[in-house]
Image (cartoon, rainbow, N blue to C red; front, side, top):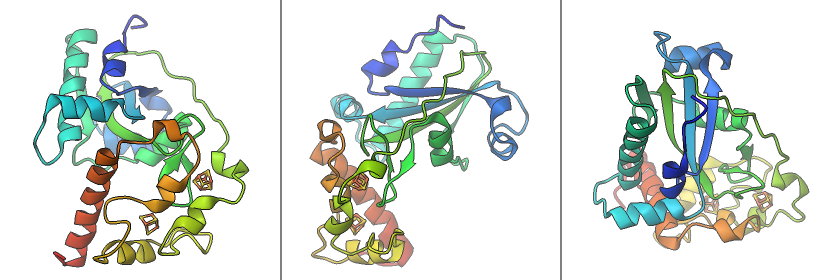
Length: 231
Ligand code: SF4
Ligand code: SF4
């Protein structure tokens, strides 16, 4: 299985991958994801930077979840080409609860930022988890890359002062302050996070404004649905 190639995923912007031995994952995680023990590897797939969004928009997908739709099709094509006949499952995107940040920590991708989005030295906060694939194939396991959090050496931590809601002020993220502010009609954060865009780490990977707006308009819609408001 060492001859499996990932160039098609790179070309599609799915440029972050980590392969885990399912037997080496915490037992609760394995039981949740693969209760029947059918698979031997977990492939965590993410994107860093702008390429994925460029591919999604070029594909012209018009559904409610164009990134997820693109990722599902791209990964199904990749499995068919690289792992023909191999049984697989894709718990995410989907309805199975998956501890994405926990997997990201294990992969060395995720450090907590003050505004709750993960951050690392390679991509800043401009990366995201896109899929979890379980495969019945002994893909080579990825060595974990445990770098330091960029926040540890960040002078002044400008993201904290940049948040117009003061949601990062107390050393702990206040979801309540953030969501209350985001729902205001004149909020600066209806389709972005000012704290995130103020972070100086890896600005070259910052998402296109349309991608930021897509992502944050979805999270705002969820906040408003939960709050019972269509404002
Ligand atoms: S501005 Fe500094 S503290 Fe804030 S997320 Fe970026 S690196 Fe971390
Ligand atoms: S979305 Fe706005 S209110 Fe929420 S943490 Fe980011 S900057 Fe603060």
